[in-house]
Length: 234
Image (cartoon, rainbow, N blue to C red; front, side, top):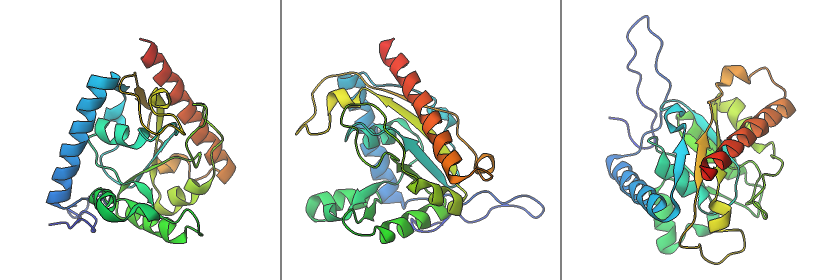
């Protein structure tokens, strides 16, 4: 049985290609993730009329880097609630204390040192990807202060290359209006939409320069944002 820190063992028969490694949580954490993400999905549907499309495109196996525009604290739980595949998240290391720390650990979050070099967080993220995990990243580096997508920072590029990960573009519309940057608490009602674009296999980006990869990712996420806005107008 695979442990929560081990990749799925190879089940390939002789002469057949082995399946990609895929990170699995232990039974208790997997059940908790499913229950809590289902609760988030129900809440988002009832209070925020959540609409999403393309979730079936998200690969269920192998290392995966999900990239999206970042508008609100709501973005990560909305992705977790709308996907079948269980994700791993990044969280500031100072949050790993007390009850909140327990909650963050229960989702196998990777601690990131926002005030230091961040090397430990990068190494932990890369390790999770090489185990076949799915990591949600926001290349803008911080939440948007006006709801519009900003330029992408290139930090994700080395992770994609070293893990040979598939890229999954995501676009949000609506979370900024519910819980904008600087607001102490979210509004109780609103409307949100998510669009999952076509995944980009690593083979399609392996030959690109770093700048070309950043530009491709930004363009594909922008297309997803535009489609999410269309969904929110329907």
